[in-house]
Image (cartoon, rainbow, N blue to C red; front, side, top):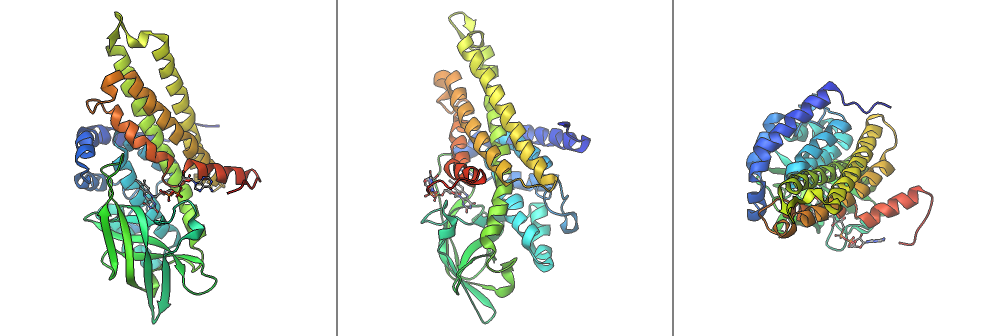
Length: 383
Ligand SMILES: Cc1cc2nc3c(=O)[nH]c(=O)nc-3n(C[C@H](O)[C@H](O)[C@H](O)COP(=O)(O)OP(=O)(O)OC[C@H]3O[C@@H](n4cnc5c(N)ncnc54)[C@H](O)[C@@H]3O)c2cc1C
């Protein structure tokens, strides 16, 4: 086994770490408080080429591998998970759907804009009636006279209402039997697409998240993505990619918790000694280190399997399940190590604590991941 990163991967990681520390970290607390969408940072990430990483070279991207993408997600997740997830949803999830299933014309139309960061995109799967049971989705698409008419609504759609959102990939049920699910590219300016008000969230506060309503929303028939009726399979495949990204963001957030806690444990005195000199605190830090290292290895393993062209669905679910748990445990311990100050906004660990929770919810809740993994073991637990 060779765990060494390539020279390019190491260089990119250094570049993104410097960018994250210099450009992203300074305003993270303020954006969290004001819930401001980080449009200036999106532009800078675009200029740096980060949006183009997963986009194929012939469409203006860099066609980077999955391990590289995971490294970038970790570095951004270490300073501001809102920024990381904005990138991941646009280029990884929505852009990834077009890359995998789009026609040459669809790729030509959308991917070059995604690659520059000049356009963002969203992935619209979850509905008000439920996100875990995606087979039960209710949004319908009816094809007549060369036009799809879409009716229904979606919940919690990241990147749906930014000033530069260009399109949403929407999962819909076609109205004719067998009522299979298909995915359709809906441009942001499509007739009948209504972007609802923004959610007020506990964490990821500077991400853009809206309810989206389709009121007789009309798009041309060539906006169907991939084969009609294959939408569920397409979405599940893309969620595997998204799970690696969320796992990497979780590792980054957990690492930030360890870094902040280590610094605090050295500086803060109690009973005449730095708190890090007490075993109760030192062992928390040691446990955080072990947890982070194991989550990082699982994440790299899933990404590597993808790069090798092997099955990676179960590995991605394993990495996301473990890493999101590690992020939450580390955030909880980081607040504990900071004592009362950890509960204030004076230190970033309170933001990490709030940002960590959604990592166990988005792109497959921890319960659903356990379901996926037990099915992979050949079991059929009652759902
Ligand atoms: C900030 C944010 C951003 C998001 N961005 C997007 C996005 O861009 N696109 C998108 O499509 N979605 C997005 N989501 C939605 C997210 O993917 C869903 O919230 C998630 O899949 C869970 O769906 P739900 O909220 O409807 O919960 P439900 O499906 O109603 O589940 C509620 C609870 O029941 C549990 N549960 C459900 N079924 C079972 C079962 N069979 N066995 C055991 N437990 C079960 C769940 O694990 C959960 O704990 C986002 C959510 C958030 C909070």
